[in-house]
Image (cartoon, rainbow, N blue to C red; front, top):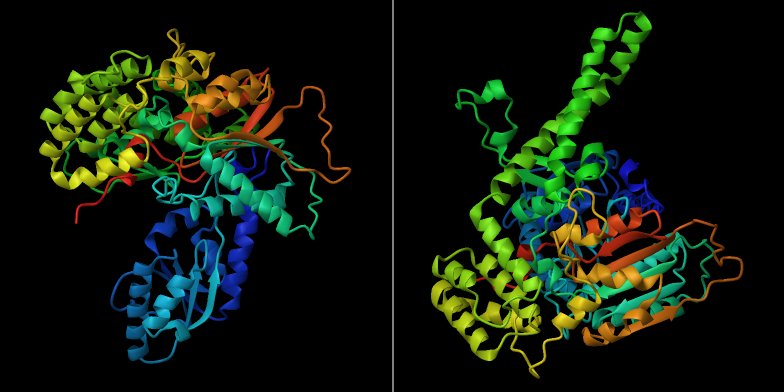
Length: 596
């Protein structure tokens, strides 16, 4: 059991166990000793649901990364390929299988497609002459992976790049399938709300799938009251801004991958070892970040400026706890102190790690460049000088700052101005291509197609109206003891979360005008519940809303939703699902064309 998955109103261990059961059943079909050959992209997501110990229980003796040519030697009966359905991976698998056939004693080959089988891939294996070598060819529908007690992600790469019209399928189909799995485990969700083209498509697919399964009536009492489907296209602004929560900044600076972060090792060396400088480690320090760690659960969603005071308070509490040993006189008192020691040592280690991370982040957030960039972002978001060429962006291009940073700022300006004037847009494009190279013309085209960088049409900028109506910009933000979600960006309240706020009360009718200004349809659907499963809410009991971000979500948006869940008079607790956990840099990078 992963304890951190069951702390909320919805026990996500139920989903994790269902996924693990399916994996165990497949492994048991391949009788005898096994080696797994991994598509490298899948190792991170799989690590969240099945550790090596589980695989070992089912006779997995070796694990390799999928690479060309010959497989490493392994004295096993079965070789199982765990792969995404991609044609280029089929070529590598065929090479592996053919070289094994020449090696000697026959092995049993199996292939597990994640999350779906693909006829195209099977045809490619047939063309390469190896399809018949596989005894089992199956799919493993790993759609939604539990990351934390209130967070699920599909970790589907390219989920936003498949933007409309291409975004009609794979990732949307998998999102609908994932929602069907959730409903099979946690009951039918009575009300569905949605905003955006992709939201409409996912809702339609879900309703169609439900009709097809009419025979099996779901008799589980519903855990969720509402589902809100939000298309990332509705709020292109939020991921482009720099996140200012502790977890958001770790992700912005170092990148959190499948709950793990790799950090520069020198900050984590015990003082006496680091003195001479000769024994400094070279390998990155890898840490797991989730709410299983008490201190991280407390500080992850705070504005970074409020983290220092929490860490110093914790340090005093831990020192006082260790000092207690001097007061332990009787055998009983000593025994009690010793029993608490492991927990206290873990707390001390956790504090040391997060103090080091906070120091690493502070070095960056106190730099002049970080401050200048943040100032420009905040000017754009509060509606200042969004319609002309920005001198800071010009300087960044002239000094050849990282291209992702430049594109992120230009896209932010474009979104905050409902598109740029043609001459401003042409100027930026010309400067970028001349400085960074003409191969980036395809990247600019992708950004335009995604609606991030575009000319202003019709001469009307809707952003000021949206900003005022939804209160997207707040001047007086209390970062230490916040009273509003705008603390996550020190002034800007995420548009996506502002859309979720009025959903339960007073309802979306109160923001009808703004909803019409934002792209895509907005809708509401009801799913009838069998008699006896209607929920009678107890006085003071909160609603549970599942928010599904189609196209990705940031840690700052997650922090804002957690803040709303904790409000005493909020009335709603949120569980967050997404196609991908992302930040502005990883988002822009996913839209960049790799040079040939």
